[in-house]
Length: 65
Image (cartoon, rainbow, N blue to C red; front, side, top):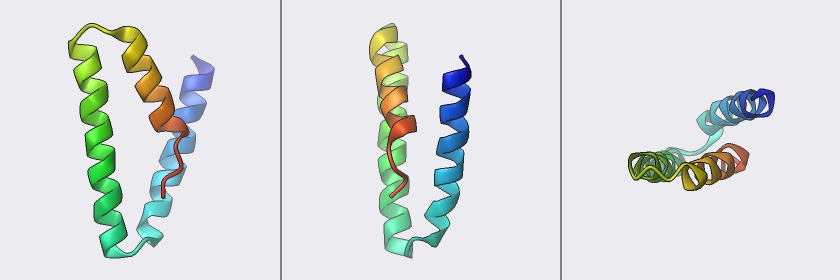
């Protein structure tokens, strides 16, 4: 649980860095994040906790660029 919380904090700090990107880069990043969130939600709705966990972990560990 602590690892997940730490990953969330790391991800939030990386999201803050998005503000440094150009407008087009921001839009691309936001679209990618939205697609990722939708994929995580779809796995949760399908009841596939392993897939949801894997997608969330990859999302949190991904660079924010």
